[in-house]
Image 1 (tube, rainbow, N blue to C red):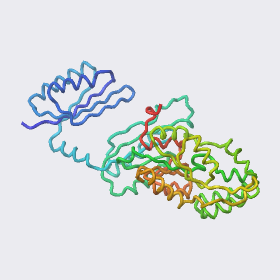
Image 2: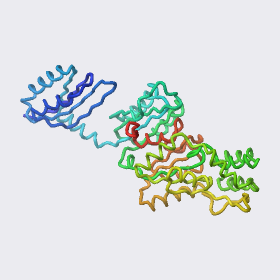
Image 3: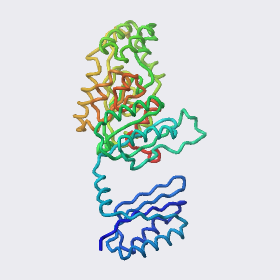
Image 4: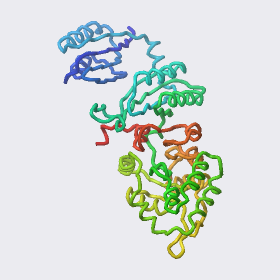
Length: 404
């Protein structure tokens, strides 16, 4: 007699002992568990068990006993027999490629999920699992301080990944949400190095603009900064022009800038968690070392590469020392640090907001455009525009419940 495969679904109000009681019955009949899954949403239990029975002559008695067991527990149970061919086909599907889509926003609506799910279905990808990574929202918390994140585990063959990535970016732009699309491989939950831009990423200002305001040349420098970050002029040229405008400014203003430094939302949480998990942290910045060194001490940063302003007689000379940390240099430094730390580039995260970060984002296994300019966001594979830096933790698969 052929063996049987039976899918058992148990649904109802969750209470202690349901899984124990059902599997105890199945154990009496020597059922083999081929797969099992359980979820609990607002006290509603959904338990699914795929079993194999090598002696089908006992199946009838086993099913009756499971029915009686679930009746006592006030649970609904359904049995679905599978043929050998159906089981083999299911096993074959496990070999398909795996992906993860992460939806992130202050609040997620049904329309957001519907649009993403429609794109997934149009590519013949199957949603295996949906997991809430963020805490359940507290309605007393202001919307601007909430996090809402859902992770979709997908399976299927995807011949044109870039096309789907482009469509998800369009949904992200139209709906005002962040959508990460990643291959679910061994590197996704095993990152080891994060390289972060400083100005307008780690901190919520451009330090050269702060210096310029104190030098009385704020408008001139800001215009050059914006042009450079949009990719309209070469970073090194723009940097040289901006620094020259600082000539004669008293270098003591550096302390005032540090004392009033606006740290980006979520920085403490992100870097605190990553340090506990053994990450190496690097600041790769076209900004200045005096700010980078302060952040290094405050957050336990391992590497700081930025630009050094020349000072003579307590005043800025309008020149800088050494090579400029520009787009090319940032990418080189990322590779160098990974090499020194014996870390595969696939395990590196890069985060930045400007055109001079694109090379760095492209080198890393996970490159994230953070509250970036449109051109940068369109060129990067991943982007965060709705929440703070700690939103990166969700892209790595962290759950809020594990971070308390």
